[in-house]
Length: 257
Ligand SMILES: NC(=O)c1ccc[n+]([C@@H]2O[C@H](COP(=O)([O-])OP(=O)(O)OC[C@H]3O[C@@H](n4cnc5c(N)ncnc54)[C@H](O)[C@@H]3O)[C@@H](O)[C@H]2O)c1
Image 1 (cartoon, rainbow, N blue to C red):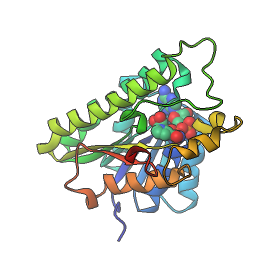
Image 2: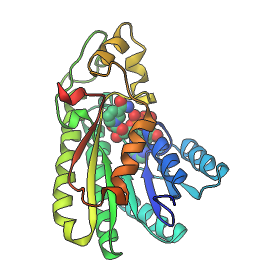
Image 3: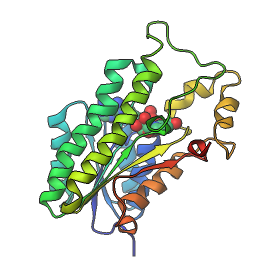
């Protein structure tokens, strides 16, 4: 018996990295998945991979900064697959995008998913939402060798915006968990350490930088997207039925120091 048989999920940021791994993992456990991303080719490719492996999936182009579009994607999950049981509120950009865009995507985008997702799930009897925060939702980011902030970005904007947005995601997680607890909607956050995805490729490429990033994690390595997806699949499943409002580090010990 798969944990997600007969269930349906919306995964944002499904074209790449962690979101792609989440979509594949949920589908592998029997969940129908609507893959949503601003990157059309990428999100269609993830949905195609699910279908190739015998799962149920479809793709939708979604900009999470558009509140109405997020609501429509949740409704599309229901019309396409019959329910909305899980939302992976995962789409995000790196702090190099600057203050306005980082807050719009990484914080407001997550807020719209919670706003519409919790309401819809509560009306339908319950559900589970997992927000992708970060170790930057629990700590300030440190630089290290080769850490370059683009010339057109104020030094506090990049890491500052990313850290503010991710701390905000942890706060929203707690607040929505409290509001919707009695309506059977669980809301949790994941706080990944540094993960091998396209988002960190630019950092890892620089001389000495990957070694520095590895040294931040007591396990001495970066994580794989599948290691975040497996924690997400736990948090959204019935195995975590009494877990809500937490910010779970999945970080090779980064937060333990
Ligand atoms: N990679 C890491 O080290 C790391 C660590 C902690 C947290 N995170 C978080 O994990 C999440 C996924 O990041 P990733 O590492 O897989 O990066 P990624 O760049 O591989 O994937 C991010 C995806 O989000 C999509 N996206 C960006 N803006 C969007 C928008 N406005 N609307 C819809 N989709 C949009 C991108 O097209 C991309 O497919 C992000 O929230 C990120 O902040 C990543």
